[in-house]
Amino acid sequence: MNLPDNLPLQKALVLGGANGLLGRAVAAALREAGVETLAASGADVDYFDADALDDYLDEHEPDCIINAVGYTQVDKAEEAAEEAYRLNASLPALLGVLAGDHEIPLLHYSTDFVFDGKKGAPYLPTDPANPLSVYGASKLAGEEALRSLDPPGLIILRTAWLFGPGKMNFVQRILELAAERKELKVVADQFGSPTYTTDLARLSVALLQNRAAGLLHAANSGQASWHELAAETVRLAGLDCRVLPIPTGGYPTKAVRPANSALDIADAARLAGYTPRHWREALADYLSGFPTV
Image (cartoon, rainbow, N blue to C red; front, side, top):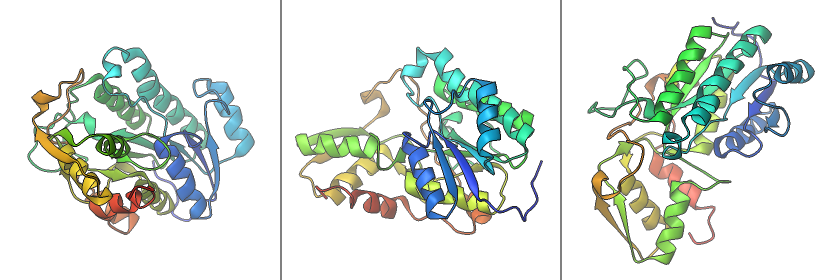
């Protein structure tokens, strides 16, 4: 179901917008675009209380809902499947029902981990999903629930490898470790799409403003291995630390990661009206905010 093209985006509700890594970036991008923004946390409204959420929507009357809430602890999800599915599948389904009832668009974020990593090229939104982990399976379940509900103006954005201000992430952790050590070993045989939350947020706003809909992939341009991302971080920061490549087997984890989960972002770029910058440029921008860089 699609919405009319002439509806202006004036007021948005961002769930997870008060304290989430991505949610805060999305709230900031909306405000930057002149959109009145409600950045809600679980303290503002119980995400799992359908009546409370319905009343909240009635009271504030947003033009759209953006769901930046999720269970993202990939390894812990292997032993906390119930909680992962609660946040990544049950909550999106509830929001899909409410978005349909209120006839407003819903933008929901999913993950590259819905793929098994066996493709030798960036994944298209139409490629078959085959998650290898509880986390990936729970996010796929959320996608499937929303697509079956098909609320008006539904956007599902699969994204990947997030870094940005406000919360610990891979890049920040590498900075901390490289400042303490002379050598780091980082996996070099897993490839994906590094994504700056600020850029993803701005892309999200453009898609909402352009009344895009559907299942899309959203990330910065270019692909990298974890080793490449770490090495570029250390280089840009000017830190005296060697970053050595290791295979996946050299860093065992509870959850299986896809070997290649790079995302093809062409559809999102077309609908947004521009192509996001390369991850290296975005990384340099992010690191410019650190005093050590």
